[in-house]
Length: 288
Image (cartoon, rainbow, N blue to C red):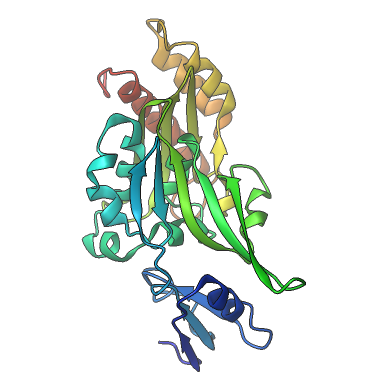
């Protein structure tokens, strides 16, 4: 229950929203789908800012790119015909990752990106697809809204650019991406993942990203050595490529353990998921 709530706001403009979020006297939180805020972290909140009136829930595929508003639900992403082809397969698979239909219908793209948790399926997919984030900041000195675009953050400290910002849109290039895939594993179909690995062929390169490399969202990683290895296999793969890929993945993945899985188990799971995702990307049988 929102026991301390005194102000519920539903702004109609980005500037009004940012002013409310940066109110000097009260802590405020964004409410979109509510799948996270309604569950935890709301007990002491005095102000909630509902962003559903901002009109940032549009999804369109146009001129070689996908543009997804931060308020777009996972269900809309999964159901969009323009995202059904191989280049955007990882994105669609990430949107469908939670088997709970209620979560798919309410959870938003923006919420899954901005939450500081490592167990999210969308970030690895967005990282390998070369996504950019369009953010709005409120410049107090100039009393105006500034918009910036940044590459999807995949390094320690890179998420600092998200602090105090309102995510408006995710922009994903389609041209140059041949195919993508994502594999994840949770304790059950409706649980958050223990590990997620996404892969994509973009131009002459294979991109590989993994979540759950640490305790925060900042731990998302592009696995550069595995990328280089897999990129060399685009023209011809050696007979034992799966064993080589497994060894490379195991060397790059962190053995991050928590209450749900030991570090060794999670790293072994990540290597298996990575090899399976690469097999799908290369058009081979996933299991052999």
